[in-house]
Amino acid sequence: MEYTHCKRIDYMEVQQTKPTNDEPVRTPAKVSVIIPVHNTAPYLRACLDSICRQTLKELQILVVNDGSTDQSQEIIEEYAAQDGRIEWIRQENAGQGAARNRALERANGEFVYFMDSDDLLDLHCLQRCYELCQAEELDYVMFDADAFRDNGMPDTSFNYDRRGLIDDQRIWEKSYYLLLHTLKNDSFRASVCLFLFRHSYIKDHRFPEGIIHEDNYFVFNAMEYAHRCRYLPEQFFHRRVRLQSTMTSRFSLRNIEGYVTVAYLLKGVPPEETIELYLHKTLNSVIWLAHQLTWREKWATLRLFRQHRLCRYATWKSWMVFWLKRK
Image (cartoon, rainbow, N blue to C red; front, top):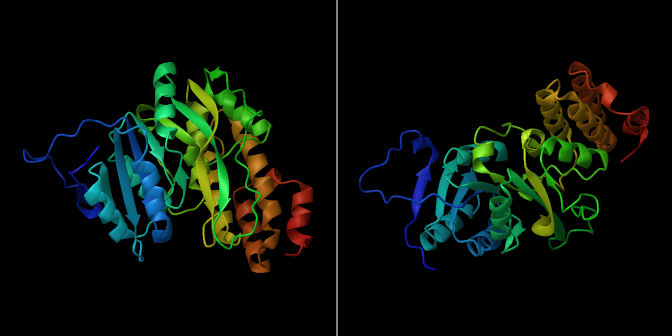
């Protein structure tokens, strides 16, 4: 199929953009794919290929250039010129959460999928998930991922395979119970790239801006309040483990600030059972990982945890590791 119409959107102009009689009328897409981009030029073509070549063709592809200083913009324009389903937005660097929020304002698909610009998606993913959601009237479908190493990266222990941990034959009538189940058996994965969401369900949801780990807040809320949902035991998403990414960068105070912000936003929101379990599971792991911080960062971490009354969510053992274990 050939696509000839392409469209440019500058974010500074978005709020003033009005339809004119000369603009072609767009049919709402089956899926809006949202892709934030920040200095991922070496991987961007492979990412866009995996979206543009999806077997589901009725897509709106929203690419947000979040202040890239490499060749990303040239690649985005190159692909937009070849595929009219691509709309691009350019903004000053504001982070992945802000980029996704800007694109959500423009999304017109029945469903929304969030893609990361250095990763890959199985070519059948969106069609399989879309058809399942439509057939079973789901708010979302959740699936798995695998991790592959970029050149020069050491072996990785990232595990996104949850087969056998979640009942893949069950339609969960209340997503709250699926969230509780995944928290209890440690199969909760806070990556928004592992979901296809019905747009009408998440249209008022937003990512926290200015932090990392914003996925934790969005995914938790999406799983907390949805109705019908399903787990699909397929490794559709392919996570690239590379140097200088959020996942592989040194654990730092920026990580702590992100997790604490999410905890602050969630704390006290009903039902408290899932919130409490999430905070215990997540913040206990965070404090254990934080043993690699500098002494100055450790004292700053303690101040943040005390300020927001989060200390009790980590065990004494994790606090001992935090203070005593060396890098």
